[in-house]
Image (cartoon, rainbow, N blue to C red; front, side):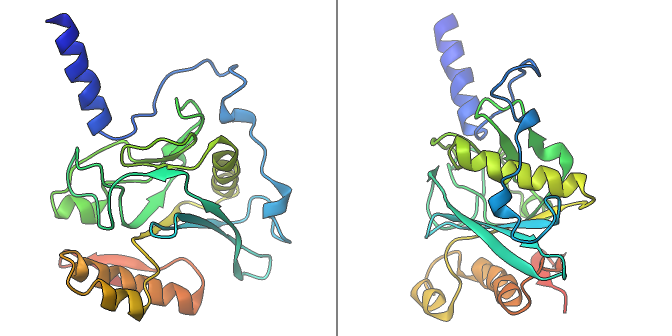
Length: 233
């Protein structure tokens, strides 16, 4: 009976997300307290300049964008996502093994240097949009390693660069880091290909943000109105 209870408890943790929070000593050399930002990411910008992250599931890419000294946002690097679970479409309930889609914000409290996945950044799921739609789930992360139960696993070397860039931007004064997560490149050809998908209406909301970003190349002014993502003009 005890063994069965432990198995059920372990399964519940997996279904809740990647559950990366494990308490380690701050002296553990594998932790991210002393991870340094990569000079190759600066490209003329301050090491603590504002950043944003953009994930495209279909191509398994996480893009790191950074604001240059003149205020221009540039893509400084694309990372291959080592693993994520699920299919195109948003996460809707705990245990569906879906990785989130939508527009999220990262704050200092979402950075975990004591993660059991080397380092982790909480995506912010569920956000206000998700809660309005009664979506459930927790501990959905961008983290190290190469295994996932609803998270985005980036490998340890890659999460070190991503984590350091986000951490330093927040330390430099950026209040929140925008995280954009899309199922695919949201051009009209792909939208047409997915026109009969049950998630199509939701994806049209994401496409409005995609189009705005492609035109303006800066964080998207996202709001939520009537239960939908709304892009401020």
